[in-house]
Length: 192
Image 1 (cartoon, one colour):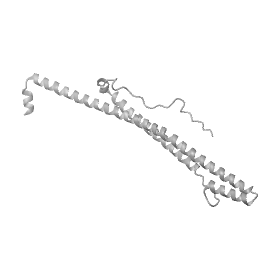
Image 2 (cartoon, helix red, strand yellow):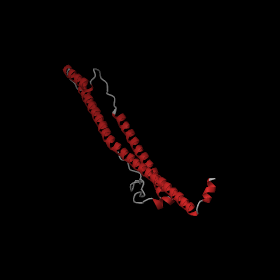
Image 3 (cartoon, one colour):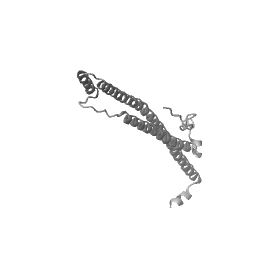
Image 4 (cartoon, one colour):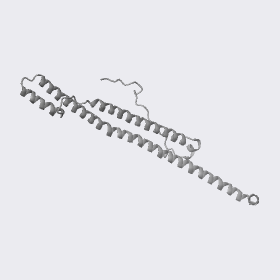
């Protein structure tokens, strides 16, 4: 019945209905195309912010860890130096009074009533620092990879057949992914 009424309509109404349907279809298509481009662009900005956040984590964390490890290593060095010097004094002691003075120095240096070497922990600290460095760099790489994936999805969308015609290239410019710094393809030389 609705189809019969459609055919009974005047031709001008049929043409106007077809034009209206076409305009509605184009509007909804543009609406979807534009909103998807906005969503991809915002996602891309979020991924880039995550990369920046990972960089900031590295900038905040690594210097503090370095200072902590350096401080612990210096403290152990000082303790071991004092213990070694105190022991050398005991070996070179000539009188019972010298032995008593040296014994008090040892107890003060290592804060123990009996003789024992303090445990060396700086090696563990350096291992932990190395683990944090590796973990931080892995986080940065992961965030860069995610950003590059988002760039690909965004660029693919905005360069699509219809998107090219309907999206403003100034509002939705093509984006570049992260690229290696010149010379980074060569292995770094590690010196000790």
